[in-house]
Length: 330
Image (tube, rainbow, N blue to C red; front, side):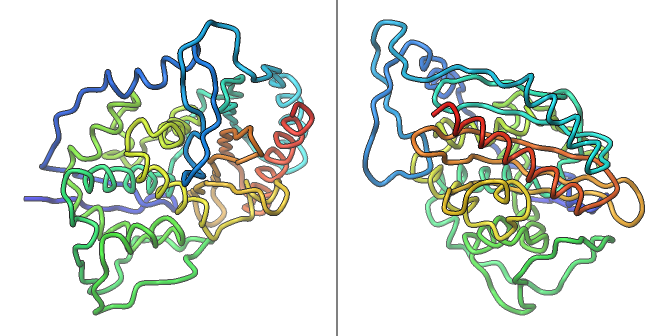
C-alpha cells in the first residue's frame, strides 16, 4: 500500500514515510548526455522548445565552443559581503552556472539550508517521470476533502486554494503545487507517491534522502541546483515533460526575489522556499533558470536572517548583480 505522510517544519512542508512502488533504471545513458558537452559544437535548434537546452550536440574538434568563460566569482563574493551587511542577514549562499558551457561556481556552496517548498520541484519531476511509464496518470482524479493543518502560518500564501469536496486531476494538483506553491496540493500528491518514484531522482543527483524523511534534513545550493540542470538538459524527463515542468516554473506567482532583479520580459523558471516563523531565524530561497537571450544561466540563492523583506531584497540584489555581469559579457 502507498503511504506518504507530510509534516510541517519551520514553515516548509517535508516528505515523510515514502513507501512502496519503484522503477529500475540505468543512469549511464542519462549522464552521457551531459558528459559529452565539453567536446561538442553548439548548434542552435529552432522549433517548439523554449525552456530546455536549445543546443544540439555534434562531435567536433575541441576548442570550437562559443562561450565566454569569464568568472566573476570574486566580484560576487565581495558584493555578497556588502549585501549581507546592508540587509542584516546571517548567511547568503549562491550557486551560479552558465548553461552554455561557461563557468560554474558557488559561494558558501556547502552551507546547508532547510529546502521547504523547494522540495515541490522533485515531487513534480517524480510524477512526470511516472506518467511517462503509466499513461493516464496525470488525468486521474483526486478528491480534496478538507484542509490539513500543517502547524504553521506561512507569510507567502497561495493566491488560489483548493475547494473542499471537489475532485482535481493529478495534473491540476501539480500545477497548483508549483504555480501557487500550494501545500494542500502537495499533501494530496505525496499521499499517492511511492517512495521509489522519488528515490531514483535523488539517487541520480547523489543527494541523500535524509531531506525527505528527516524534518531537520538540509540541502546546499549546489545540490538543489542539480534539479534545474537536469530539467534544462532533459536528462531525466522526456523533452516534452522537461518543457512542461519549466513552463510551470516560469509561471510561478511569486516574483519578489529572483525575478525582481531581472528586467521585465526576461523569462525565469524558478521556485522559492520559505522556512521559519515568528521572531526566530528565518530562511528564504529562490532558485531557477534565467533565460538571458542566447545565454541562459542557473542561479540558486539561499538566505538566512530574521527579516523576510530583507531576505527578499538580498535575493533581488544578488540576482540583479549576476544579470548585470552576464549582460556585460554578452
